[in-house]
Length: 568
Image: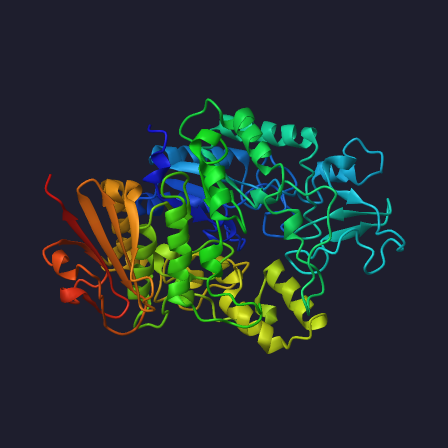
């Protein structure tokens, strides 16, 4: 196996609680995944990434882990996990786990011991601090720093028993681990080796660029109208991050072959990503960055902003250029934290949903980087028609709604408009398998309502339909496996100022591809400089075979991939 096998690979993310429920309790489980492995094998993906399946109080849907070396009973057992792993490997696929070690659950034995007393041996496994000087512990504003939590409210929780605060960048039930303590790091590495020894093929590392904090913890910048400060300068890409990741590589990964390590890094810059993914530095294989899924965000979080295509191209183009020689990026539109891409950057109307889902897949998968498909994306699943706040389950949505109304003076409709379009629950509605009740996800009542459009959008119908989004994604994945230019080739952005078309070329040796995606509901002609020279090129793939793309005129939401070879 080549050292960089993952450059040609496609990863499929499974959000287990929403994928398939085998026992009728309304919650997806490992047996449900086993039952649908053939769907994934037919799709052609190389790697499955499982969102957390460890024991958890489920405060943040499993990203609050209470035992790193077992399986959440809702999902199954270690025996069933081993059966799943065997089934994945038998089909020629790999499996990577979600590693959540910036924080644990407050119900993890490490934290229970840490909070027991100030002189507990594990006290400094977490970030404990006294109240701000001159202020009474437990009163508003007495928190050790002014940081806000990602999920709303302060990033500190007062603990009555010991009279101190603990840091939680996310939920108060997700206390941050103190990576300054070498005992913490060794405990994490021991756990990681245990999973690899079991046969797991690597890790997706949750918010891994937050594990190193600036010491002493500094106050953050407070914006007008905000109740709490942005503390990210104190914990994003901290001073010891490279040191920790290199230590992790030495302690866990060195000498093992065929693994995949991907670091989720909100706010990471191109230059930082290049350092993290430079193979000579021995940190991680690739990063998850967020710039392109923040392209439609403005300065006001409660004001929806339409995507400006030139902005998206500038962002993705910057990443393509920055990692052209050294480093590697993950390519994704969707995951468990993002709304459905066909509803966000495409057109989810019945007329254009299929074409725009295929176009978006084409543009993404033809970039340089490793593509990730999130469950249901291969069907063109859409956002859910949310009504009021009672329809939402996500801790982030509920916390932000409360803070926006109570502390920031927003109206319910103002906040709901954004949550309906951008909320994480859009990604978490159950997988749509067929036209039976609850879309074939469960025989019980699902933990989150199934999208009512499942009779029109489901896997069973699409596997029978050669023109479906599913079969188109199969072609995109097969193309990456077959054409070295997609994994290895140079990237050149075309038409950077065009607000309608996304166009670029890929070149490797004497092979060149031209990729164009129409991001509008109208026919558009691609005014590229050497258009005539592509007239004899092979049309490798298009999402609208019936539409003419002669003279490079693209139908609404059409994508085309042309291939030509240069004589030696």
